[in-house]
Image (cartoon, rainbow, N blue to C red; front, side, top):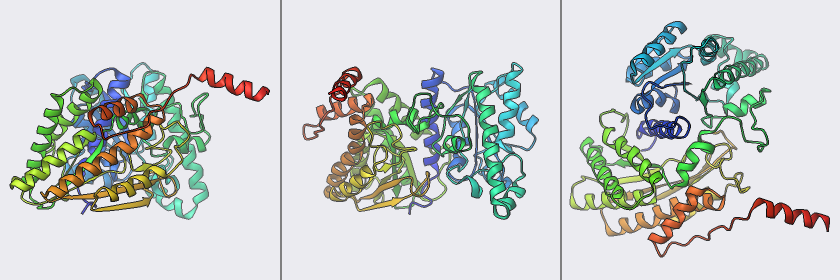
Length: 470
């Protein structure tokens, strides 16, 4: 049911990310006329150009496979296909002049694009504000990354016929790519790692991308989870999914209306500014979702919601099924890329600094806890986005059938599923998570979390010094 549920999930990731990046690094909610450059139009990365137009910026996405680019162009997710580098540059200039929202798919290697943009920046023409990379760098030597020195066809042959030489070219290409990004960063580019192991592989290729004085996994450029989305997760917001089992588009429209009604009511209550920003982003998203034609499989939707939002939306759906407003049951789930349920030190838990980033306990706790609190099914598995051996995921499915029992299960399970991760982030010292936990305990007398007691680092250092001298 979930394999082709809805490509809206990937677009929403990108949209939430751009909004958060815009606020944090550009100091604005407005991306009009701003240029975002990245690469990859395959699976999840294929959502990048669509998200660019939804968020109002100019998205320029490089792709070496013409088949992949043509697929996204035919879908309407990429508005313009361009095969010449200078034509691409001229389209960027035109978009900036006119302040339009558009997407450009460049058939070519992103390293060539970065190097040309860096050359222009050195000459005084800065054409890009934001940048990232969504090639599959967790598998760089078997098709996840294509080196700039080879054509697409040459690369596909060499990776199998001469893997050692191919690896050398990939690492050289990574060094060139980061070099161009470094030049642009000196002119004001805000580059972030998508969590696809791009900076990790660049470091393995000999590029100095580690943060000065940071840990072994801290890079000089921000990671979209570690420095951007981690704070959103710590507020309790993450990708909440649902599927209409009626397979009726009208049911999906109704769920959109119900979700919007719930969010509007929550916004009328006493919520923090940070929480209100996230809800407003998602209110805009859910109201425009049908217009953006994002469903390619099941009648499914996704939006970012916190514990309060997920519970209230689930209860509202269940009541709508009971009353007949919805024709058939609705299945709830979430992405693994969420507040809880995934342990991944290079992505989802990379901003957990209490020493537990490499532990796989949260996914297990979520899986088992969800099963006891009413999930219809649960799953615990490896891999997914960051590569095998790098991540453990715990997921669930919950069927709403309109019954009182289904409502009770939804309330109990969804509260745990979100709060488990927020509590862990609170213990790790995240201020947003601490605020969220305290508010949740105030609103629900049955909810209890042991709050951390923070000690000044100077006091700890002094104590350790005294212990060492004794």
